[in-house]
Length: 140
Figure 1 (cartoon, rainbow, N blue to C red):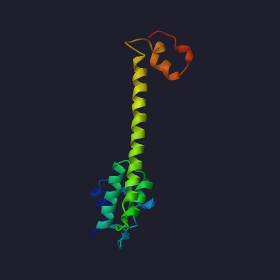
Figure 2 (figure 1 turned 45 degrees about the vertical axis):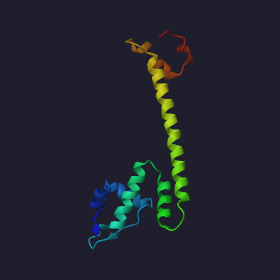
Figure 3 (figure 1 turned 135 degrees about the vertical axis):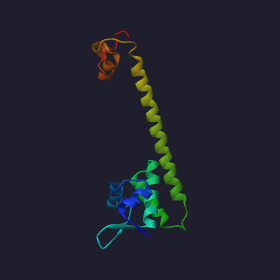
Figure 4 (figure 1 turned 90 degrees about the vertical axis):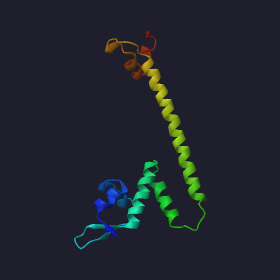
């Protein structure tokens, strides 16, 4: 079966622009064209588009997706490379989670500098954001 770009995008849960972008990035093969020059996507291309979208929903980079697509073309090979790629991605996610937890703590510390209402000129949050040591001795 063949699908026009809008149908393919809808089936994969993305926008038409996203389909074009994945084509430009070489993740999705160029589709056939109709007599009216409309893009026509096959079932396998729509499935590949869905695969790419699922990978992106897991926050995988385009390079990682490209590697996974290459692995899919070698079905009889060992999946050790896929496992390694996913393990590396898990490590990246964990590092980002640690960084976000540190960010949350910094924001909480900043928020704790200012209790109650006061004038903006004496707001400990704004003073804290300047990083100027001349404001660090003021009472909260």
